[in-house]
Image (cartoon, rainbow, N blue to C red):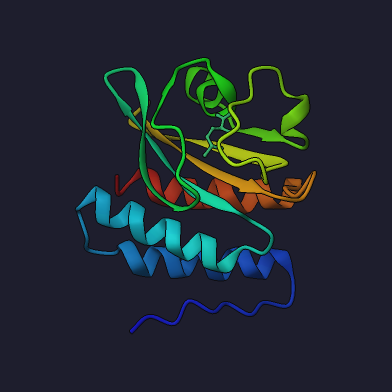
Amino acid sequence: MYDFRIAAADTATMYRDLASALEGLVQGETDAVANMANAAALIFETLPDVNWVGFYRNIDGELVLGPFQGRPACIRIAFGDGVCGAAAAKKQVQRIDDVHAYPGHIACDSASNSEIVLPLIRDGELVGVLDIDSPNKARFTEEDEAGCRRLAEILSRVL
Ligand code: SME
């Protein structure tokens, strides 16, 4: 049995523990779906104040929904559309304090108010994106971004 609970004194320690738990979960497993499923569950259980955590995969130049935790979401997103499509097209992290003020934001869960999307890049190619939503405005700080970038690095290798 895996104990998901990570009780950390501060955000940096929490992300360090989360990264190490993620490394442990995916170690030795080559199945991308299994790794995305466990990663979504681990991140969803660990990060406070999040309502959706999951993946969109790059399937022939289109983002297609992958394993996630949270409410059912839109299945296909074109590169350039919404926050996920922007992260995919630019291959850059998108950290949005207020999704309702973001032109073209795709509302999957009306409870979401802020969002961070990280491109997952292996050998220069975009394999997908990791999307994390929060009901809180401006939930994701620079420190969260740094921690999530580390998670994205780990995931890029095992998808
Ligand atoms: N809000 C995202 C769509 C995906 S859902 O949040 C799960 C976007 O604008 O790309």
